[in-house]
Length: 288
Image (cartoon, rainbow, N blue to C red):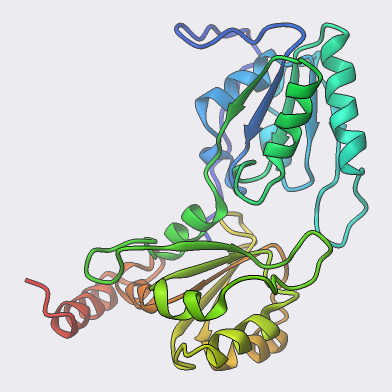
């Protein structure tokens, strides 16, 4: 990926006309996006400038945290696979304790907190404690990661549906209770979050359930960051190819013919290469 251009940020106090007030004694649950600081929402940026305390996950970049006001206290909460993390109950208790002491508390999570991010669990805990809160979504890794790789998650000539799936259950094991036959036959695009650990098991379930082993697959590691890595493969060989490539988490896995569009839309490809691929897609799909 191209190196991000540093955001010129002034510590001078800004005003945000029309934005909701960040009230003392409340918590904002905010998605920071998948990695690229430019994908943070304006509401998220505003919250950083207003918060007294910021409780953040490991996937939130230093560039984003740099935009916090100078007086904000930052509280790391971990929450990265394979790394030490605070227990969920301790995180929610910290949010409640800070808010009830009259602080403006920003809970900053990677991606969108409400897509496999436990944001709803934290919101429910705040509701039970009668702590005011606001939910601010972020750009999720599946949408941003695929777009940065040159793949839209929907295209009317390829798919009319897309399914987001967690790659593991709460205990870390594979999602065994899913209807794999329905997934294999009913959704033209499958996107798995947190799937590397159980990828071999899941790809075998899909093939056993009728999905063609030659179905295109793309894996995007550390999506939208300078360390982003992309691996294109097929369903039947995906798990082995990941082992050979030593691709690292966090990674998004997308399965379906939509992956073919990357040949024409890859932002790093030469214009002529993209044009040739685009003509091939138009011809094969009989697009007019």
